[in-house]
Length: 485
Image 1 (cartoon, one colour):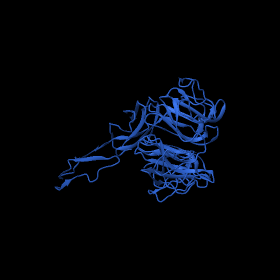
Image 2 (spheres, rainbow, N blue to C red; image 1 turned 90 degrees about the vertical axis):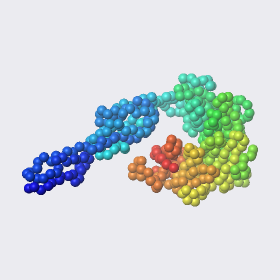
Image 3 (cartoon, rainbow, N blue to C red; image 1 turned 180 degrees about the horizontal axis):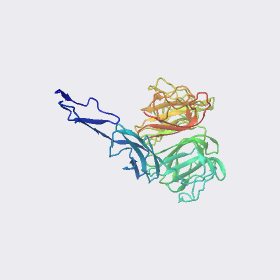
């Protein structure tokens, strides 16, 4: 009796987080004290948000807890609801309206829970929908050629694989050759097609298979039927074609080293370089110095790219690398070539030793160190935003072993960046999809698909090769990998 008292908050409550204050908490006790008031309120509201992947359409509306709507614009990659929710309260993010133009289906991952802090891990993934635009729903269908140069509703290329493709400066898609069906026969093609987004136009080549090349200067010339060639598009929108396996001017079948340009303005093919007969050996000349006689050997299954100066580059492939006792030696190549339209010359850029013949082994010094990729066919490659070229995998000649090494070509130097120096490596897969680590890597493979995203990351999909089991024989894969330089 007569003592003083002071009631305070020693520890604030959590789950949910609140702030409690004391009123009438101090005084002198002249009787039982019953008027101390402890008032607790939620101290902080939390925001709900996350990331958006793949949104190209418009009209997407997200909703939180069945009533808080948020409109998302096309191309948006993140979101945050403006209305906060009380700490400890549940949230539930759903798609209220799916996007259109184009139509997409968006799904929400990690969209519900209890907010005890700002939520930033909600993922909204939007996938484009497949639309059957053209072509048949059965296999081995031949083309409907119609009249050349016209975009006609009935026009359609025949079934094929191993073609060369480009996209021109107007966004139209171009298709040349490959192995396919024409006039009821499946074999090599040399037809050129353009797709304007609505209809096909037959631009050049024959409506039959196994056509020989017609070489010369002027009009009426056309590359022969082939598979496994490479192509580029220059800054003027013209299409370029090199090599492959097919028919030469004499009707003989084999690997080719001819270089062609297709002028979209003239609607004509122009024979630029290389021989009009198959089986040509290379003339390397001096490394880094071109001449009118230097030229790559005939090959297929190579990779190529175009630099910022409109020069064309190629690497490797399965072809002819040297001559022994008057006989061309055929195998996996590892030579790097540059073609300069300004000088009309090929330049062998190395590496040293790649001019000694096919099936050269790689020089693996150490990860991150300069070296030399070995001979290979059917690898894949990317050109990054800095103008550097990346090379992955492929197949060695002879025994057909697969590779999973990653190389960077920059300023004339090859650098080993990742993967193994030994062939036939199995993939090292993490326990969960989406996990990143320095030891994870795709298995050895060839004939895969690849691309570069807007963040300069490298992506690859599938191919023929090795899964995560070392004892398995090679098979066909459908795994998707990302490499972050």
